[in-house]
Length: 135
Image 1: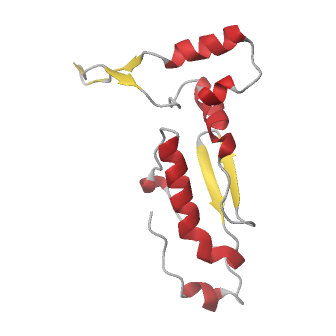
Image 2: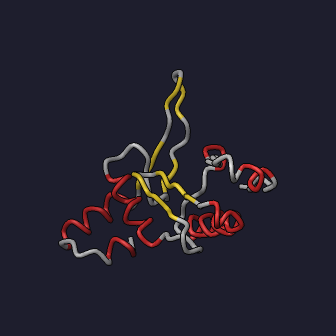
Image 3: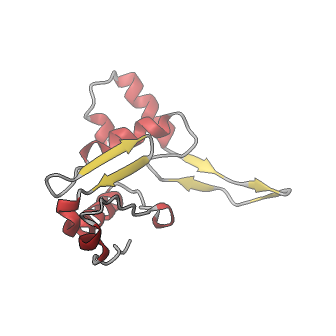
């Protein structure tokens, strides 16, 4: 909410958003059974209309550490693009994103995190020797 407060939005809209995120509870019902009710403390609640907007506000201060690297943010997904000239910065960038996520009450979903390497024939020999990043 501290990031929302920095936006120039009317007080009544800010108060409505704050009220929406405070004391938000969830339970899951499956096969006739209901889980215990628990409070949702995440800044981005998946499946809600405010989720993507909330993520974009939260992620506004997420930038790459190394010049030339780029971060693309879409709804609640983030893509890190590291050009061949910066391959040595991959682990530092991933660590930076993990720390940023922790600082913002988010988690990097390692099971959905993948590395894709695009290479030309000329760079194939250089990149095959790189160790895979550890997420």
